[in-house]
Amino acid sequence: MKKYWRRLVLAALALMTLLGWSTYTRLMPQDSYHTLLIGGSSTVHPYIEALAQAYTKTHPDVRIYSVTGGSTPGLMAVANGAIDLATMSRDLTEDEDDSQKINYLFGRDGLGFIVHPDNPLENLSLADLEAILSGTITDWSDLTGKNGLETGMKGPIQIISSPVESNTYTIASDLLLLGEELPGSTLYAASAADVEARVAADPNAIGFLAWHEGQSSSARFLAINHVRISRETILTLR
Image (cartoon, rainbow, N blue to C red):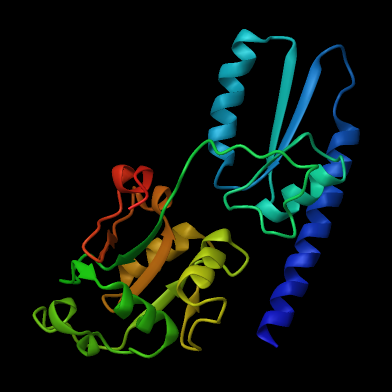
């Protein structure tokens, strides 16, 4: 039932976003300038804004409009001709990828797990991380070996999730849970900033978000299998 409602909400969001972009296109001023409408991932949006600003400095006859709304609605909008370019913070699925679409990789991001700054844990094994997210491990004292016993960490683990409609949630679910739902005790944040704030306020919390979203966080990223997330480890695919 949860998955059904999630799909229903995403479909409604996609429809509303697509209609909004179509209206936006019609309302744009029709002048002698060349216009380029880009839409999609909110993660990619700040970079598109910076690139657009630099491009229009050397191409003053071009007007670039960038809007957000999500990777999937962006793809739907470009397929229907409502926008010129779609930005996505995920790969195309097999169903989405066809000969009519050309995609370019221009950046990488990473999925990171954060804990309260007072949490003494520095590293989690991938096996223990998967066990936490599946609800098999529910207390910090249940962690195995150097992951938990030497820290003396105790207490119920509180998972703080990114919003279910976010690509961050989808990636975490697909990679670590094979598409299954998180435990019923999971708290769902409204945004990446909300994930940070909730984890920073709860010593027993663990949350996940994109690496670039946690750079100003008062919470702390964990190493996974002794690999700490950084620009270098992301670019080298570690």
